[in-house]
Amino acid sequence: MKVELEKEKNNVVKMNIEFPAKDAVDAYNRASARISQHINIPGFRRGKAPRSVVEQHVGAERIKYEALETLLPKVFQQAIKENDLDVITQPTVESYDFNVGEDLKVTAKVEVRPEFELKEYKGLTVDVEEYVIPEDAYEKSLNNMLDRAVTYEVVVDRPAKEDDLVKFDFEGFTNGEKIEHGDGKNYTLDLANSKFIPGFAEQLVGHSVGEEFDINVNFPENYHEEKLAGAPATFKIKIHEIKQKVRPELNEEFAKKMGFDSVEALEKDIKDFLQKDKEARDRRSAELAVFDKILESVEIEIQPSMIEREQNSLLEEYKQRLAQQGFTYQQAVEQQGEEEIMKSTQEDAIKRIKNTLVIDKIAKLEKIDMNTNDMQAKVAEMQYSYGLDKTEVMKQLAMNPTMLSAVSQQILSEKVTEFLIENNKINYVAPKADKKKSSK
Image 1: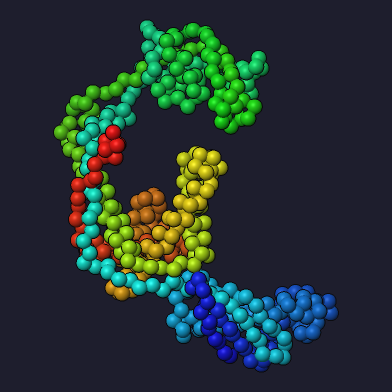
Image 2: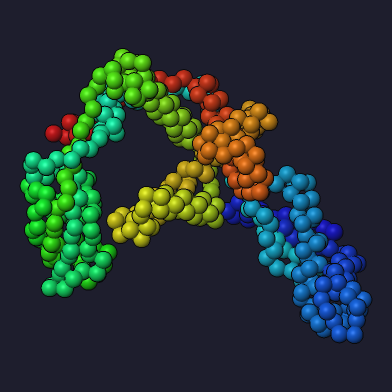
């Protein structure tokens, strides 16, 4: 057997493989025997039909394909190992010349990791804009905590205000016809956070329990039901109940209700959280800045197919995030434009690929690898994040090689990132003047 390699453009290696006629015939005969054991051929027991009969029954090409399936994996593995190829895809067969009784010739191609020179990555000085906790951050955090503890009480001595909850019946009409699914009984609406048609909630303000009245609105021009888009509508309303929000006071009773010994302990917890958030933001900014600094001096030729695969992966992640937020990809396209989305994801794909290549190169140069303790720590982290037990996490990783590879890469990335933070000087600097202020 002979294997010759040819380097092509875009980090592709072509393998020209030649098997001696005897090896090819042996593989062909074994493939024919295997196939005959799994098919029914009239007049023959399974596995006993001669090769010529199997060929007539399933076709010679089916047998050749089966023979190649057994011959090639070992050859590919051997060629990759002997030539120290850093492959990123499985080899694919481009063509083959398989005439039984003659030498078998196969042409296959495989993508390899882009080669590049990594210059300075240690001993750098990197300026990072320090995150400044906004002056009103504490007040906002405290108000958010108080807002989450809001209760509601029924009111009967006044009309509805703009921040009340109102329970009502409604029935909608447009062009004199009743709107399909445009009615409801005892519906409760938070007037301050309404997702109804613009102008609907505002017209409930000022009305009291027991009142019956009409609300006039226009459906948005981009409404999802085409026949209602932009159409005027009238809703008949009857109010049944009004509740006002009761916001708790910041006192010892509230602090203990939230799990703290005192108001001081609650306030300290908020301030500690804001400080930890600042440290996490600064750390993330430092990590990004270090990688950006390293990439400034790195030139990497990335093959289009590699970018396309990464971009497709990013698009799928983007669509999943949209779905979790209740949006569709089509809505995102209508809002942002598909060209802009594709441009953004392509840029992100190129940057992610470069970062990954740099991480792998540094890991190799510095002999940074993953060990059992690293995996155990990551499994524990996944247990906490997803609420799964250890057995379930390990089962998922064992059943999903892609997930296992992603987790392993994440661990390696974290270790290399820690190495870079420790071996480069991070110089935190004051943030630039607010652009909005400077533009006035």
